[in-house]
Structure formats: C-alpha cells, structure tokens
Amino acid sequence: MLGTIIAGIATPTEAAAIGAAGALFLALISGRLDFATLRTSLRDTTKTTAMIIFVMIGATIFSVIFRRLGGDEMVIHAFDALGTGPYFVLFVIMALVFILGFFLDWVEIALVVVPLVAPVVASLDFGMPQSQVLAWFAIALAVNMQTSFLTPPFGYALFYLRGVAPDVSIGTIYRGIIPFVLLQLAALVLLIIFPQISLWLPAYLAR
Image 1 (cartoon, rainbow, N blue to C red):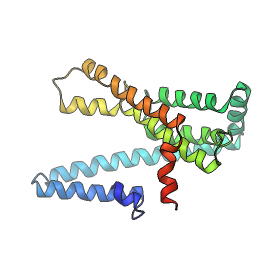
Image 2: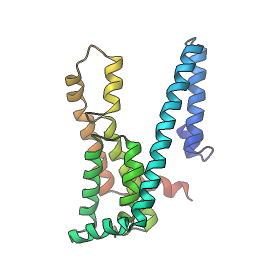
Image 3: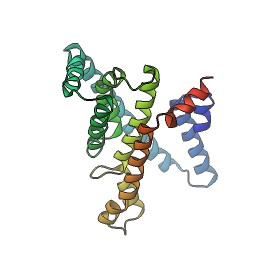
C-alpha cells in the first residue's frame, strides 16, 4: 500500500482498495474466508463509510456557514490578539488538537478543526514558503492526531487490545499506553523543531 502511494501508482483511496484485496487474498489462502465473515466485513465497512460520509457532509456545511459568517477571520483575529510569535500559536493549536483527541476521532478533528486553523498557520511566518508550511503542518498534525488512537476514554487502539486480550484489565492498558503517547509527543516536538524531517521526502519526490 505505501509503496504504491510513494511510487505514484495509486492514490491513498486506491491503495486502501489494494490493501483490502490483499486482506481478502490472505484470508482465502489461509482458509479463514467464508460467506459469514465476508458479510460481516462488508456490513462493518458500509457502516464506517456511511459514518465518515455523513461527518464529511456535516463538516462541509459547518465550514461553509462558518466562513460565510466571517468565522475564519474571527479565528485569525483571535490568534492575532494573543500578540505572540508563530510557534506559540502553533503550540496552542497542537494542544487543542491533542485535547480533542481524548474525545473525538481523527476524522472529526481533520474535517472540522483543520479548515479553521489551516488558514491561520498559512498566514504565519515560519521562515519557509507557504506550501512547505502547510505540508509541514499537515504532517505534524497527523502525528498529533495519532495520539487519539491511544488516549482514553475513546482511544480505539485501547479497545482493540482489550478485545484480543480480555484478561488484561483496562487500567493496565491505560497505564501501558503512557510510554507510547510520550514517544509520539517526542516525535511531534522533533518535527516542529526540525521541519526538514517531514519535508525532505516530498522535496525529493518532487524533483
């Protein structure tokens, strides 16, 4: 999947289809694919897809109305009123996204919050071209949103682990994710301090 994306053969959506086909093939050759499993997978996929589409519709309607009422300018003026540097504004945004990750899935954060804060970040001076600022911000934001899979109470990875290890208490799982959250935050700090970590590969592929 990642190889087809990096090589420019497939888009992320098409690569996901390749991954689904690969999963079906592996289930088939291992003898674990039957009609009941296929039906359950299709039903769960349809439910998840419908949820994402409805979130996208609602987020689009919200963004259009918010911008039509001048909300994006209000957000920019609110950050300007802080009278601080660009990195403090970035810190506030990242802290907000991290807190929202406790209660929202990454889909809701990406579709609702990002359209509001991306123009603010694009208008700030980080000493690099605007196109690089947005790419750097998007990658840093993605790393930040990864913590939403691990942070309680709605961390999906916690419940996946609980499902495959029912004998392990939820308290033990919560304590076990602390080092991984700290590692992700450390990676986020490194990305912010050294933007080229996230920019060298897009620059290389753009040659």
